[in-house]
Structures are given as structure tokens and as C-alpha cells.
Image (cartoon, rainbow, N blue to C red; front, side, top):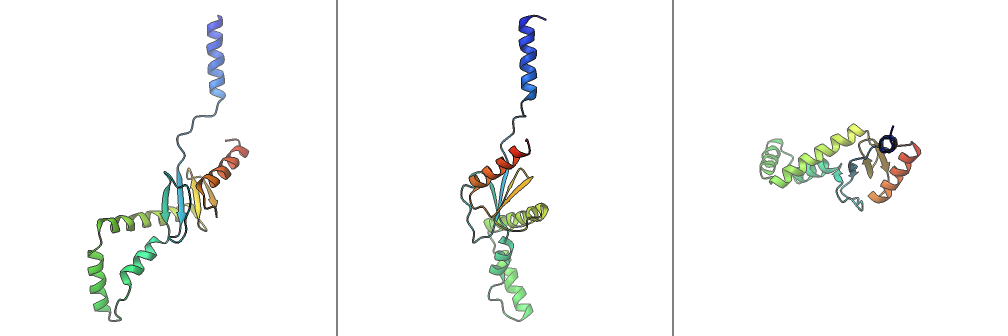
Length: 139
């Protein structure tokens, strides 16, 4: 085998030993509307209490008479803006994701759908914890 071929084989062998290049990590932040997490950047942020807050707003001050309450609630629901409807959808999606991940408290920051860091209010700090965990596992 000539020198050029040996170098090529050596380069390919070294490249095969390297860990695969990861696409940008997926970060999801789960919190309450009263909580704040710094450094969310491109992360997807879910307010897991969003449905409760929307429901409270729609049902605030309804009369005790069920027929009147239903009529008022129906008008309020029909008057929702497109932004309101998108917020409802996002809230439902976030709640479903939190249930899928079996999150037990917030704030929770999920990395790549595989690891969660609880109680940290800064994405960069949570990322450092996640990367340390991955390094210990040899990933």
C-alpha cells in the first residue's frame, strides 16, 4: 500500500473513531406563568398552567345560572382572537409534552427529549449540567 493510501485509511479510521457530529440540541422549557427562565433563546417554552389561566379568564365572573353562564362563556370563546387560539393550542401541546416526559415539577428544562434538569432557572446553567452528565456517560 502506498503512502497516500495509508494516510487516507488512517484518516478514515480516525474519523470513524470520532463521535458523530450532533445537530443543534433540542431544548424545551416547562414552567408556570409566574416563573422566569433566563437564556431561553431558541428553546421552546411551555407554560404548563396555561390552560388553567385561560379557563379562569373565560369563566371569571360567570353568573350562577347555568344557562346564562353557558351563553356568556360561549360568547367569550367565540370572541377569542387568533393569538388567543394559538396560545390555547400551545398550552395544550406543552401540557401533553410534560405528561409524555412525566415531568414532576417545574421549572424543568428538557434536552433532546432525553434528559431533564429540574429547578434551574437558566438554560445555560442547565446545559452545563446536561453536558457534564453526558460526558460521564461517555456520549
